[in-house]
Amino acid sequence: MSQSLPLEGITVVSCEHAVAAPLATRHLADQGARVIKIERPGAGDFARGYDETVNGLSSHFVWLNRNKESLALDLKRPEAIEIMHELLATADVFVQNLAPDAAARLGLGAAELRERYPKLITCSISGYGSSGPYRDAKAYDLLIQSEAGLVAITGTPDAPAKTGIPTADIGAGMYALSGILTALVHRERTGEGSEVEVSLFDSVVEWMGFPLYYTEYGGTAPARAGTSHASIAPYGTFRAGDGVDVVLSVQNDREWASFCTGVLERPDLVGDDRFATSSVRLTHRDELHALVDAVFASHDGAEMERRLADAKVAFARQREVKDVLTTPQLTARDRWRTVETSAGPVRALLPAVTVVGQAVRMDRVPDVGADTRSILGDLGYSSAAIDELSGTGVLR
Image 1 (cartoon, rainbow, N blue to C red):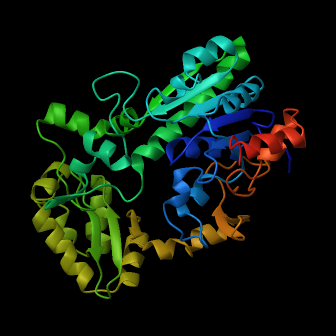
Image 2 (cartoon, rainbow, N blue to C red):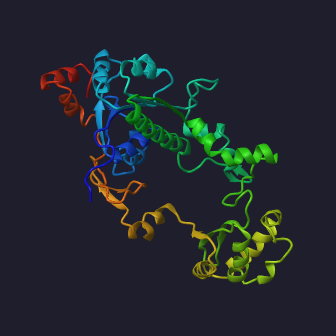
Image 3 (cartoon, one colour):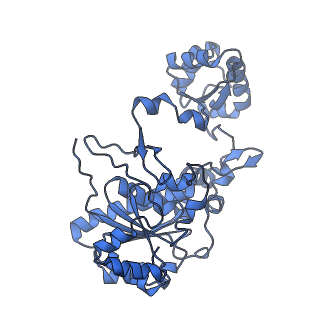
């Protein structure tokens, strides 16, 4: 197996916190980039304080920050900004998700940096973008999900709900990753850097494509339906007699016929006018789901899963999070590794993208300022100079 990674030799400097920017840069680091994470002296990235569930460390932080180096800098100090420019002079990518205009006030705005370092790729991640009436609004994940309409279509008929993971942050992080990789390809071809902008709001609105089209051209928004679907039936969670929850997704007439014959053992339903096509099945969803509920309640989960598999009808087990930790699919594919942290080794999943023959990077999760001395040493600072900066509060 090759021991090189595709982004080896790429240096990323990131003024990052929370989820969106750290997710983007962690994926860059997974692929071999050197990621220098700039943190506030002392507390560091505020995501470090979200919880203490991973042996005293934050679950969010452990998830998002392996393979990185941490440099503690007080960016309000001129000496720290000088260090930033020394780093950026040799960097390939600068990422920031600071508050609106904060980077510009520090002299680290995209326009200024692009003029000073023409080959540098800058990536700015914001809540609502660099213009518009919401430009300066607070932009936490729940707020973005609400403004983008995601909360309105998630949940049950009785109550809307946010998603159980930070969808807006993850979406923005992945689009930032995509934009940075695209900019690296562009620079390889032209020698020019790029200014990449990503907003959490735009990311979620893009993912709302189906509901937006459905609403604009259908006249009404998709209904909240729990695990059911606004335009497909039978679809969603059905409970077997032993309490096992099985999730169905019958998406075409061929599967419907197989489902009736092989799973419900009711071939007469195939030609029933109430269920003959997808649209009429949706109209009669309550009747249809009552029929399905009755069959599932009469058998255990293993029997229903056997019937579904034999009939080649799409299904899944609705699992609790604890069950995913031990799911045989991850175990059989050897998807777990161990990464080091200051609280000891913890389990971590391999990157979602697998490249055959490529090495896998699963390095430590850094403490705040763990690499300050080595990074400044690489810039030519002596131990005495580093001690002096540390003593004045510029560093940790």
